[in-house]
Amino acid sequence: MGTDGNAITWALTFIKAHARRLWLVLFLSFPTVGLGLAQPYLTKILIDDGILAGRINVVFWTCALFLAASASLFALSALHRWFYIDVSSRILFDMREDVFRHLLKLSPRFYTHHKKGDILSRIDGDIAQVQRFCTDTLLMMINNTLLLFGSLIIMLGLSWKLSLLAFALLPAQVFFYAPCARASNGLP
Image (cartoon, rainbow, N blue to C red):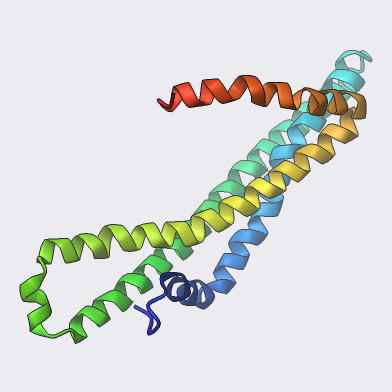
């Protein structure tokens, strides 16, 4: 591993090496989240401006937009996932290669004291966990933040009064949800 033994610093060197690809994955997150968040607004148009107003042309156009948004979301999600898997596997490969290079430099005495299966298990499992923590956690945090703020903007844009009501009821929801979450996780 790294000369200082710090696993995070070691892992960040591989992430920096693939920063361009990670930026592409991050860039694709914006339209993917945006298309996912378009559906509530399209539903509002469909109901308010189409069905309730009795305007069949708005219903047809909104349904066409739903189909276009769904197809675009599917394509962008597939592309996003493909790029993510590509960069993620490259980072994992580089990490394993670095550890393997380090293992080749060790003296034969090291291998008499350590089981080969344990070493292989560490190369396979532990490095994969470090890679998942470094890439998955970061990208998930960014996607979830985009989704949260986008949802808040849409909620406030659709009806600020209902949004305030939802925010006012949030503490009660957390109060009632917490025991259910603990029970489903087997906690007392």
